[in-house]
Every structure is written in C-alpha cells, then in structure tokens.
Image (cartoon, rainbow, N blue to C red; front, side):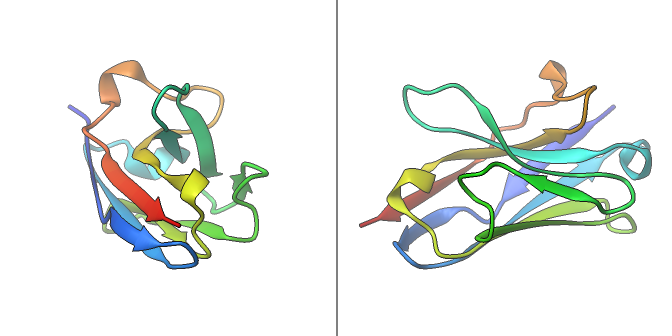
Length: 118
C-alpha cells in the first residue's frame, strides 16, 4: 500500500524560499523515479521536477535554476527546494511516481499549498 504525504508549504513573499518534503510509505520507493507536480487554480496539474532512482534530475523550464529536487532512499523521502519564488509558483504541490510510468492516479495525496505574494 503506497501512501504519499506532502508537507512544507506555506505563504512566502516573492523572492523567498521553501523546502517541500514528501514522505513515501511502501516498499517500492527505492526502485521508482519520483516527481513533484503542481496544480494552480484553473490550470491542469503539471510536472515540476523529476528524479530517477540514480539521482538524475529534470525540471520544467519555468523552474530551472530555481528549484532543486532530491531524494533520500533510506528515509524514503523526496524533497523540493524552491528558491527565488514567484507569484506564478502559487499552487498546490504534490509528489507522485515520476518517469514514463507516472503519475499513478491512486497515489495522489492531499498536496501542500504554496502561496507566493508579490
């Protein structure tokens, strides 16, 4: 049984930083690529950043150079360090399986709200 629990969101001024965490319960974490996704009001959910089992990363153009995804396979946790935040980064952020097999619909958690004020 896979369960994903996101945390670390909040309200921050433009230019500020936040670090999101995603705790993964289940035995398959170490063999799955992971991703951070976000959904802004009125928009479709989009992939923000992905990380492979080996640690290779990819980012949406809109966050390159500002966001960093990482993972701890012992703690079964994925992180998203977000710097130089912009109002357009405001969204609910979710983690899920990344790569070609992701995301998995039944794995969506409650997400964590990030609000960036101008």
